[in-house]
Amino acid sequence: MNSNPDTTTQVTQVVINAPVQEVWDALTKEGEVLPHFFGSVMHTTRFAPGAPIRMRTPNGKYTGVVGEVLELDPPYKYSMTFKFTNYDDAVCIVTHELKEVEGGTEYTLTSDRIPVGTKTEKDMARGGKIITSTLKSMVETGKPTWMARFIMVIGNLFAFASPKKCLSSNWPMDKRIELEDQQTSET
Amino acid sequence: MNQPNHTDLVFQTLASKPRRQIMDLVKQMPGCCVNDICEHFSISRIGVMKHIQLLVDARLLISRKPGRKREFFFNAAPIQMIYDRWTDEYSAFWTTQAVDLKYKVESNTKASQPQSKKPAAKAKPSAESKPKPATAKKPSPRKRQRKTVQ
Image (cartoon, rainbow over all chains, first blue to last red):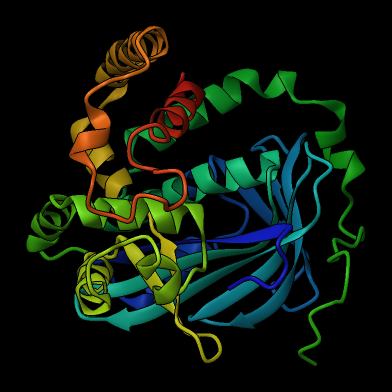
């Protein structure tokens, strides 16, 4: 069990009926609107450990999620530090894992070090199941679920209402998004 | 999760009160181990483990073993997919209205007449165990989820 009582872990898993590489490509697509990440676009300098990750609105004006790549093992694993820009909560770790299983690819989304009782915890729980089920739907049918479409429409409609702290100008690529206490020492 | 029978498996697994109680417990205690779950049941450890295995097979629970102990997490994705499969924009709106009304009215009714017939029905798991997740807990998370949709 999680040794720290102030943080928690969430795990979400689906099996996607597609080869592992196809799921990996959909998961890590850069510069394109990603329905499984609520219609945001992934920006990075180079997709490698230590590189920044920014999930931005299609027009680039706002940034919803920031982090940096911790571990990369294509097409099986990719983990990153993770922070919602609109909350002042501690940085979490999000890990995407793919495994070849009978019937396709098992996709596991694990969020660690989530601060308990925060908005980050709530959004992570809601996000996890929508990300996994939408990625499955996208890869298998080419279409997002209605829920993901709905969220994208709402997101675009209300983008203007995003708080100032979500402006992309506040989250330049060279701003470090590090864990608060001991850095994961896997070097 | 794509085999045609996975949906069957999820529904069959859900159709059991102890298994739903295990899901509630694991949801409340992410990363708990078999012993944490067994504490809440009067049935044998082997019986509980059988239920857990069925939940893992249906992917309603995820089991991980990072160290010596096996730990469990609740996986909401199979239930999300049931929701996606039978709900669309229109039905989501109206059912949310109806279900929210149901929860609201029922919680009012409960508040006004405290002694209901519930306690007798759930004698199985040890009576002094932690707050029972099955009844009281459910409405709020669900309500919260749906609300965000609108």
